[in-house]
Length: 509
Image (cartoon, rainbow, N blue to C red; front, side):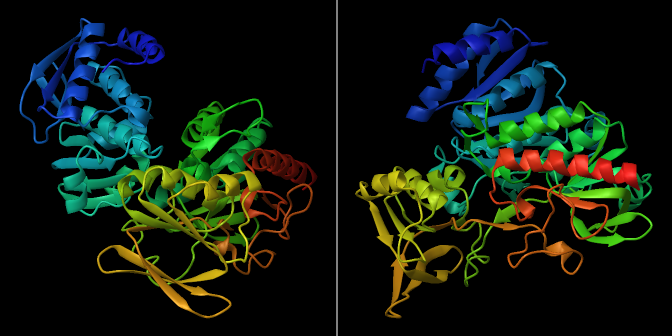
């Protein structure tokens, strides 16, 4: 398998940055994936005198581990790490060779403090844009702590293992052979789940801020940067930095950038925020807000942060269809990301709930992978753009059901079907299938503000033109507000507006 010329040129530059000698220990058979993996490994070795190859028997075939000479690092790739995982491979080569990972010293200290044996395995699909975050985080932990090992497993290369474990959503993380987590997780989130991380007392002891931003998406990042540029004490507390864009694959309408991906934009936002003196508190979820002499934000871990002004930018989340079976079978056949989880349903029947742009785009995407797609739309007509509908109706393996209300997602230990009701006749129909993708829009993350400030009927915070809410000193921005449109570029603008509004409030009060 020959690497693309452009990729090979970039890779050659990276391999020049290796700081020590590496041994790639390869366990290969005679199958096609083994041949591809062996060709990749041998090509890597041909490009750098620091890389050698040794054939061994590992726990899985095909797989290979990345090691320092004379030392097992615990970093293993089962399958061929191309697609979105190619970056994970390059970073593993550099970090195992001795190049320091780009993480804060406090994170490094937490990793090195992990005691006991921790053997992680992550099931991925190479088309998943969330999987590399998990793979790279666990690889870093393996490099820094000899008690930690990690194996990336390409589900497409180990289908029998995936089906045996009923892995129906990626990334799926196992720790010491037991389920540990599903979905995108940062290194800080993994550490927090292992019991590492700042305590509530440590957070509560922080001095009051001039501006405290709640939420770390495009609006929150923009607000924090604009506030910090005014030279005032700024903090940002977020459940996960990057917010909803971490679950977005292709972004083609962010002006001046022709095309990017959500995780890349989130990483760029975080790097920009770190250029300023901003106190970033990640993995912390707000629980309540109270206006006293200062504005107090209570976190779910019990900590209380204080600030003269607050900017709420908690964004939105996937809207649930709220029928029996949805929560019970989440990650067991119920999914929300066709790009990530679609490959796990190759050759199977699935349904997409939702006939807007996101739903029809998902159906088109899935139709190229799965056996058959059933689209279920509540309204009498699809809401998606005409060009998308035309493409959808041209596909031979798609059925569109309109004017139908989803009644139940059925299954035992995983999804086995869906039941919907014709809204005109009341007739029920059950369709046997393996997966259901919910694509019915977003709901604002403002439940924690119930009774605190004015919201509209769907929970969006009502704001004035400067981002001000009904509580003096509290501002809001982005998808959690009653903005006319939910777009990244609009959220960034509203974040800047709210920061300028908060600064003006500080001057006048």
